[in-house]
Amino acid sequence: MNNIVLSLLVAIIGGLIGTYCGSYFLHLREESNTKKVRSIAIKALEILKKYAKQSYREAENEFNNTLSITEKRTIIVALHKLGVPFEIPYNELFEIKKMHFVDKVIDKEEVDDVILQINKGYCDNLFYLDPDSYFAENTSFAKRNVAKKFVKEVLSKSRGSKNHLVSYPENWSSIFGVGEFQSIRVFQERVCFDVLFDSNGIPIPEKLDQIIHEIDMGLWDDSFQINYEVYRSIKSQIEMNNTFQALAVQQQNTGIKASNGDSNQLGKVDSH
Image (tube, rainbow, N blue to C red; front, side):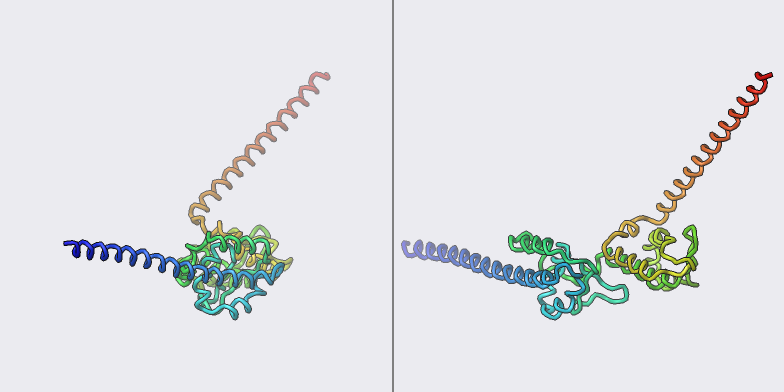
C-alpha cells in the first residue's frame, strides 16, 4: 500500500515539475524571440534615424538592403502602425523586397520615441502581423493610390480655366475600375483649383507634385470617406442657401433704396 501511495506521489510531483519546467522554458523561449524581434525593429529604426532631417525616401536603399525579407515581415506592420510612413506607388503592387516610403522628413525625436515604446514592450502585440494582407486590405493605401493615379494620368493632361472648370482628356474615366472611380469622385471635384494651372490653362508640375505629397501625407483622406451622393446633396443645399441669402440681401438693398427715394420725394414736397 505504501509503495502504491509513494508511486502516486512521485508521479504527481513529477508531473507538476514537468509542467512547471515546460512552462518556464516555453516562457524563456518566447521572451528570447520577443527580444530578437524588438532588436530587429530597433535596427530598422536606427537606420532611419541616421537620415534625420532628410526624407524617408533617402533611407529606402539602406533599409531594403540591410534588412532581410524575413526580418521585414516581422516588423513592418508594427512600424507602420507606430508612424513610419510606408507607401505603395499607384502603379506597383505591394512587394516586401522593395519597401517604399512617403516623401516626409524624418524627425529624430519621433524615431527615438518609437524606439522607447518598443524597448518597454508596448508594441509586442504588433509584431508578426502579416504584411501582405495588411497592406492589401488597408483601404487608405488603395484610395490614395487611385487619387495619385488621377493626378498623374488625368489632371496632368487636362486643361484648366476659371471657376474650377476643367477639360479632362477624352474617355479619361475608362482607365479606372468602377470601384476606383467611385472612390475619387469627391476628390476629383475638390482638387480642381485654379492655381493648379497657369494662365494658358496648362497644369503646373510643381503644383501637381504638391498634391501628390499631400495625398501621401493623408491630407486628402477625408475626401475618400465621403459618399459622393451625400457630398453633392450637401453642396446643393449650401449653394441654395447662398442663393437665398443673396436674394434676401438684394431685396433688402432694393427696399432701402426705395425708402430713400420716398424720403427724398417727401423732402421736395415739404420744401414747397
